[in-house]
Image (cartoon, rainbow, N blue to C red; front, side, top):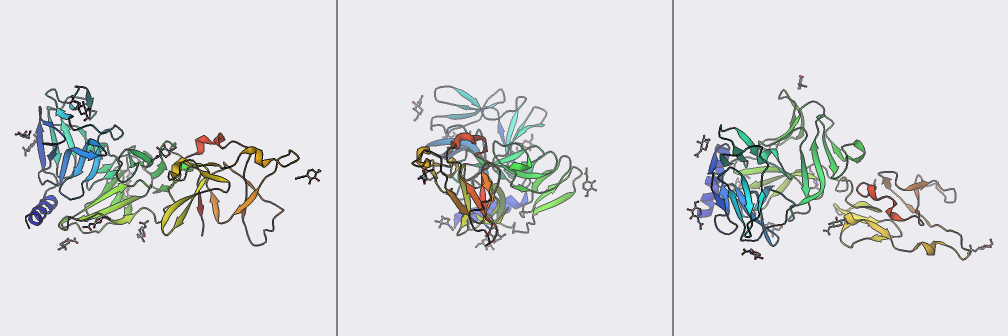
Amino acid sequence: MASIIFFLLLALSFTASAQRQTNITLGSSLTPITNSSWLSPSGLYAFGFFRQRDGYSIGVFLSGISLKTVVWAARRDDAPVPSNATLLFTSDGRVVLTSAQGSRTSIVSASQPASLASMSDSGNFVLYNSDREIIWQSFDHPTDTLLPTQQLRAGAELVSPVSETELSTGIYRLKMQTDGNLVQYPVNTPDTATYAYFASGTNGDDVTLNLDPDGRLYLLNSTGFNIKNIADGGYPTKETINIMKLDADGIFRLYSQNLTLNGNWSAVWNSTRDKCQPKGSCGLNGYCVVKDQEAECICLPGFKFVTQGNWTSGCERDFDAESCKDKNGSSAYTMEELSNIAWEDVSYSVLSSTTKDNSFGSFLMIFLLMLMPVKLFPTLSHVSRLWLEN
Ligand SMILES: *[C@@H]1O[C@H](CO)[C@@H](O)[C@H](O)[C@H]1NC(C)=O
Ligand SMILES: *[C@@H]1O[C@H](CO)[C@@H](O)[C@H](O)[C@H]1NC(C)=O
Ligand SMILES: *[C@@H]1O[C@H](CO)[C@@H](O)[C@H](O)[C@H]1NC(C)=O
Ligand SMILES: *[C@@H]1O[C@H](CO)[C@@H](O)[C@H](O)[C@H]1NC(C)=O
Ligand SMILES: *[C@@H]1O[C@H](CO)[C@@H](O)[C@H](O)[C@H]1NC(C)=O
Ligand SMILES: *[C@@H]1O[C@H](CO)[C@@H](O)[C@H](O)[C@H]1NC(C)=O
Ligand SMILES: *[C@@H]1O[C@H](CO)[C@@H](O)[C@H](O)[C@H]1NC(C)=O
Ligand SMILES: *[C@@H]1O[C@H](CO)[C@@H](O)[C@H](O)[C@H]1NC(C)=O
Ligand SMILES: *[C@@H]1O[C@H](CO)[C@@H](O)[C@H](O)[C@H]1NC(C)=O
């Protein structure tokens, strides 16, 4: 009963004043076990230590719900720290993580010393200088999540996590380009159309991606006009929180949670139904098929997974080149038909064979370059991808 009242209060105060903040003064500190976070006034958000794998990481998370949800992570690719680490807001205005041995790691990259920090009810962790000007805020350095009232500015991007539980950098990104187009690419690819798998098709200078509390996800141009709704929103806001996240599978979704029920997040909207749309999930020599609404990677005939269970590692030849030579010592090839497959790039040769009856419609003859080492196409490993058209 007490917890129900707590969450009601929490939800009400959240919707009432998202701008309230908890001030954190110079010299404050946190440790993973006791005093592990600084709560926003409503208690909905917190900045501090959260458990990850065998240790602790630093970030902003929803603390007022049973399933802790991390919405921003500091130095997401750093290894978690043990329980004897300390987070310090130093007297000279820096936020540093200190190990028991005494080594120090800066958590934020502010250009000048801070004189005050704050955790707001909107989920933003902010540093101010002595003139009370904002010098750094977590909202400007998003990881994989966009919160209501947070903007993804021109030039910024969200990067997917490795998995639902492993928050370090994954393989997809959603970029708010400076040309006004909101585009998804695999990581480590240039911002060119060849690699894109989602685009809003908009343009303009200083376009921003915005999320309203009701889940409306939209693009504003520099004069504040809505140039496109990505998601129409209209989801309940009373006692409910709606957030947007770029998931490990490369699809971005809106998640909703009824704070009074304190249950699970439910996905209310997604950027695509096609789980094979994100490019590169299958790695080299693999292709994606949707099976029971889930994406699955399959190796081309004659190939097997480099690492079983790791699709991004791709597929390699499961025979040696010698077996392609016939008794006379000359080369022989196997040709196999893969129907209803679309090639995403030109890293394979496609032959129209005259030796096979193709009167039943179009099909692709895939000429597997059996004598050619697979490693000839390493740079294409993130983009070779096929999909089933039917
Ligand atoms: C926190 O600091 C800001 C800026 O100095 C101030 O306006 C606000 O009243 C403070 N809030 C609390 C709860 O002390
Ligand atoms: C937690 O922090 C508060 C305020 O900074 C302090 O009064 C309290 O003693 C700390 N508790 C522990 C267990 O360190
Ligand atoms: C801190 O904890 C780690 C892991 O438990 C341990 O290896 C290390 O010796 C500890 N350091 C100190 C100074 O206690
Ligand atoms: C923003 O969009 C509005 C409506 O389409 C348009 O009139 C205005 O010129 C745009 N602003 C810029 C800076 O492009
Ligand atoms: C949230 O759950 C409470 C308790 O079941 C219910 O009364 C309320 O209508 C729900 N709110 C929404 C927006 O679904
Ligand atoms: C939340 O999801 C987990 C796993 O999907 C399930 O076991 C649990 O019962 C769910 N909890 C609620 C309150 O729906
Ligand atoms: C995506 O959302 C649509 C409704 O908008 C739903 O029908 C579909 O099942 C969802 N797909 C996934 C993969 O979540
Ligand atoms: C899967 O393979 C890729 C490429 O070889 C590697 O970078 C990644 O760490 C592997 N992932 C897992 C979970 O082992
Ligand atoms: C080897 O070459 C001979 C003569 O050209 C040919 O008759 C025979 O079929 C070839 N054998 C194989 C296995 O291709």
